[in-house]
Amino acid sequence: MNWQVELLQSFLLASSALFSIVNPMGGALIFAQVTGDRTHAERILLARRVGTYSALVMLISLWMGAYVLAFFGITLPALRIAGGLVVAVSGWRLLTAPEHMDEVKQAQAGHAMNADEVAFFPLTLPLTTGPGTISVAIALGANRPSEPGAFIGFVVGSSLAAIAIAAVVWFAYSSADWITRLLGEPRIRIIARLAAFILLCVGVQITLNGVLDALRAAGLGAALR
Image (cartoon, rainbow, N blue to C red; front, side, top):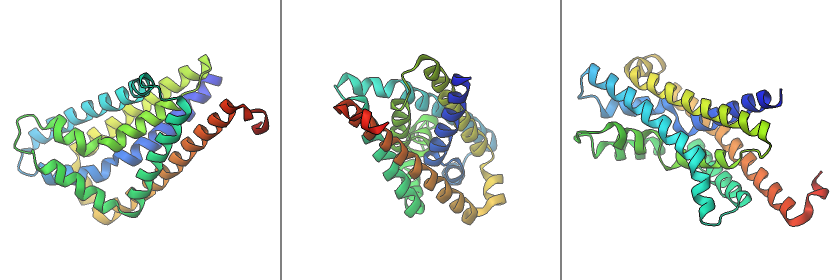
């Protein structure tokens, strides 16, 4: 049952963190605005491609990002501390000024809307899965357990979370007009702030795990038990 518990915990942790930083509902607002001159069929196709590309970006960041950083000699505790701080700062910024973050995304997305291939850039990067999402995914991947059974549960749970968030992006962007009419911008802002608070808590937890790992590596593990 150990790997099953780890799978559930990893899925809940990764999905809450990724949902908070990706913010599909807020992204749907921007998607509806920057693709307003396209037909409904074109927007459905773009939404499907953005969902697929978003899944790839998150999965690659989850499982390759930590190894790339390790190639440069960055230890796992240092990566967890730095990644957790990045996640916490991202959550704090989203919590205190989500409107500003959405304005930045919209400005970045608007510059290239006349390009032939807009599904990956700018609709996936940086509109949906920008540097903040990549940082969060790398930090989550660096938080993987070392025990074989728990590791399997972590891999499956985190991967399913990334795919689930990408599916939510696909649905939200495909239904962007309906969602914006149903919820309205004020309610979407409230959802974004609640998600940002969860992201802040996740960042603090990842940082705490990194600090504890560093203390154990320094020979203080017995005192922490």
